[in-house]
Each structure stands twice: as C-alpha cells, then as structure tokens.
Image (cartoon, one colour):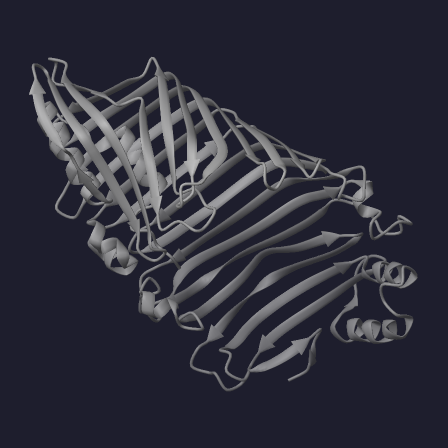
Length: 500
C-alpha cells in the first residue's frame, strides 16, 4: 500500500484555490495559507510587499515530493495578490499562467509543462477570522490549458490538454487546530469538457480525445497533519489525519480517434452517471464507487468484427472495514456488482459462430458482511509487508451471491461463524459452524451445449455430472439443483450426508 506525502493533484488544488488563506486581513490570509501548505509540501516566496489595501507575494514556489518513487513536483507563480475589501473579507487574485516541473520522471514521460488558466467571472473571496475561515469560489467559466510538454532531456512532446468548466461554485470552511487543519468543503460544476490532442511523428501516431461530463457535485471533510507524519499512515491516523468525502458525476461521453501507421481507430463510450465515496480515519475505512448505463464501442482495422460493442447496466464496488486493532470483532461489508452485461453479436461470433449459447445479459453479484478483527496495525508499513493479513474472522454472511450467464444461474445465501481457538479440525482454518444453500439452474443444459460445441470432451461429462450428483440434489423445477452445505459439531454435511 503506497502513500504519497501529497499527491500532485491535491497539492495543486490546495495551492490554486488557497482554502487555508481565508482570514480577515491579507496578512492573516497569507500566514494561514503557508501553515496549511506546510502540511502538504514546501512553500517559499521571494518577497512580500503591502501596496495600499493589497498584499503582493512574488516569486512563489510550491514543491511536493513522492519519496517512494523519487519524484518531485513543483510549480512557480510570479505573483499572488490579497486585497482587503474593507468589509472583513479578502479577495485573492491568481496569475493566469504558471509552469510545472516534475523531476525524477521516467524516460519519455512529461517532465515539465506549462498551464494557462482563464477565469470568466472568477471570484475568490475569504472571510471570517484567522482561527475559523470561510471561503467562497465562483466562476461562470474556468478554462485550463496545459501545453509545452517536455521530457527530462528537453525533448518536446506534442501534447495539448484543455479543460473547461462552467458554472463553478465552491465553499470551504478552514479551522486550524492543535492536531491539524480541518477543512470542510462543498462544490458543484454544471458541465466539464476535456480535450486532448497528441502526435508522435516518429511513430506515426495522431490521437484526439474528448470527454464531456454533465453536472457534478462533491463534498468533503479532512484534517491535515504535518507533512512529515504522512510518510507513515499509521502515525498520521493516530495524529488525527482523516478524510471523508463523496461526489456524483452526471452523464459522461467519451470519444477517441487515433491513427497509427495510417490505420484509423475510433472508440466511443457513454456513462449514465457515477458516484464515489471515501472515508478514512483511525477507526475505519469506507470506500465505494458505482456507475450506471455504460456502453462502449470500438472500430479498428485490427478488430476482426464490424461491431465490437458492449454495455452493462451497473457496476459497483464497496468495502467498509475497521482499521484499528480491537479486542472484539467489528462489523465489515464488501460488495461487487456487475449487472446486465451484454455484447454485440459480432463479439459473440468470435467464439460462438453457431449462436448455440444463450446470450442473455450476464450478472455477477457478491454482497458479503460479517465480523472480524485485526490482530496487528494494518496501516503499519512493516505489517503490510507480511504475506498474509493479520485477520481473525469471526463470522461471514452471504447476503447475496449470484452468477447468471449463458442460460445458467448460481445463487447462494447463508452464513458461517468461526471458532478461532480450533485450527486443527480443518487443517489450520478456524472451525466453521453454519449453513450455505446454493441453487443452480440451467447447468445441465449448459453442459450439453458446451459438449456440442466441443468445449467439453464427451468423456469428461460423466465425471462432471457425477460431481454434481454428489453435491447437489434435484430442485423444484426442471434442470434445477440444490446444494446444502452445513458445518455442524465439527463435521461437514452436504445435503444431509456427512462427508467429514
């Protein structure tokens, strides 16, 4: 598990939006900003000068390091201005352009580039007090262009990235404290468009890409601690570091066109919507994402079918786990879901030209919950190097386990508890108690189809059917099987028959 002392993107957001610079006077604004950035990287300024109601900071440089990868990220801003508006608030003015440099970058990777920003109706205002500040940010449109890319040896990279966001609005509340600086924020964007253009004359490649994103929102809470503590996440969490945030993303459209050696390739994708959440503190980690109504298609001379498209209705992943060591088991949940996966007939024809397999939408769901405890600090880098996680599992419930594809279906439910004092009965595994019931539909028909297609040799079918007969019994309907697996009194039973 790798941890940045601060990722370059987070450092950039902190620097350019300056949420910690909120205070009643320009000097307090600048002082608070420096304190916040000190928890993220190194900030230096050439000079500060008060001109009337405005404090000017010139020759400002921000640097962040990735110690594990040996990479340094830095940017320089010629001038920042903090103007006292006379009503207890401060207006912040950013430069329009600023360069970025990445040292220690890999060969052929961008090592330096320049960013230009244009804000229409841009307003950045700090208010409140030096101890508890509020921040309001708004723009009718905010455009960013990154170009002048070069490698570490000075070779130019023909790459331009443009992004334009409309109707931006954001709020921050910043409260410095003894343990760290607390930041609470919320924001929204009506729409975002990102365009990328890249060429490589030597390789004969030309790529253009466009991404359009609908209305998006986000909220977050965080406590930032000293940068030196972030090298060890266990230490940082104990010192008070935490994050808790989430976001929603509106409809997304992606279009990519590429030409290589005279061969054109096109990729198109759409996304109905997405959501994301992450929370981490000294007690728990809660992470999840989901997306709906996804469709994608690819056309290329190298693709052997005219219609290479696929879609799915929903993709979701989530995990909620305890982080701290405890004497008693704690709750956990885990979810993976891929629903209604479909593919074009052209893709099916690659391995099923006779259309013998059923092409119903496929679904896979793993929805689990249970209790367990960590026997060591899982955020300690030394513990993360261990081959097996220091987990003591107390119980596991199958809220839903479903696999449905090709006309077959497997559905399982049930739950087990584990005796961690008994590692002998099942060869080092804590002895379980409980029952799991699995229902199988259409399996025999699927086997027959696989045989007719030559996917399963005829002489192996007998063994497969015997195995099903040993672990399953006839169900309520045709081509339905039921398997009841029960662990009881240190013994294993399958459909009532003791196997161990």
